[in-house]
Amino acid sequence: MTSAITKAPEKAAGRRLPWGPMARLTARRALFAVPVLLIVTFGVFAIAAASPFDPVKAYAGTAGLTASQENLDQLRANLGVDKPLAAQWWDWLTAALTGDFGDSSTLRQPVADVIGERVGWSVLLAATAFLVAILVGTALGVLAARRPGGWLDRLVTSLAYTLEAAPPFWLGLLAVWLFSLKLGVLPSGGLTDTASSTVTAGQVASHLVLPAGVLAVSQLPWFVLYVRQGVGDALGDDPVRGARARGLAERTVLLGHALRSGMLPVLTLIGSRVPELITGALLVETVFSWPGIAAATVQAATAVDFPLLAALTALATAAVLLGNLVADLLYGLADPRVGFDG
Image 1: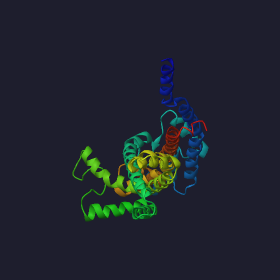
Image 2: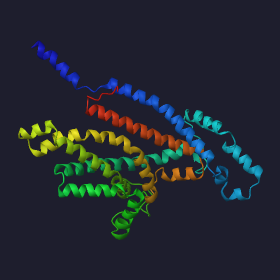
Image 3: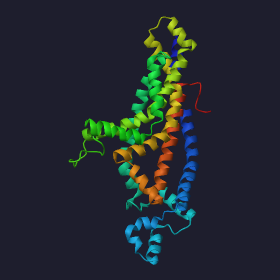
Image 4: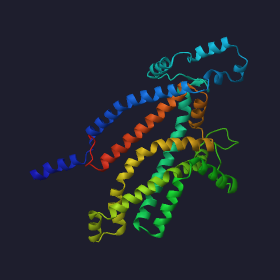
């Protein structure tokens, strides 16, 4: 009786999540993110300062063509772009640490408001597309790995390699032509219908289908190929062959054994795909007039909008770092042999 009582807590403890190692890994990554964000934001200011575009003339617009040099100099001082590069970056950084990211010179509103109004729609688009890409890519990869060299395997891998070379904006234009112009089954862009003045969940869902579908298709090939390779390798491992020898059903062997081992490389792929997911989302948002951060990013880059450009770049960098952290945490949970302290 005593041994049974003492063994039960041990088993329960073995099922506990390793919160301590996970917290230490998260803390190390957070410390590593600080110098990365500092370097990235300073690089944004340096590149923008070296750009031939003049933020003052971009802010003034057509009025800047007839304005006197004195007025332009005053405007330059008001915008804070008359200071040295390092001083501009330091002023922005110290203010950003207090939550003040400055004012956008192109959109004429606080940067925090610009991002707050748009980032939610971008996250909705990217998260939906990423989830669809993972689910569909996993299913197609498993089907292809089940019969290596078969007709389904050749079809799926050929489609994956073809889509891998297709740019997201081209896929977006093709989708608009087919589903909106030819078939007329889905809206071509925007967030709501043309005659509607209110945003409803139904309209958002219908307008989300095409941009999320296109972005998912652009991310799909890598998940298909990684799952196919991982599951195909796992099917030849001794544990899987042993499961087949014990007479387990093929579906149980495939989903319960091979897929579990084959999904481990996919976890690392999640983090590495975040940068291209962000880039693809910007292109897709532009094609479909999705009200995310794409338009703000383009305007900030072309008009050399220092505060907005730095904030958007820092946000994208933080998203990439967070994606890598999540991938490493998932991998450590899925394969305890890896651990979190390496």
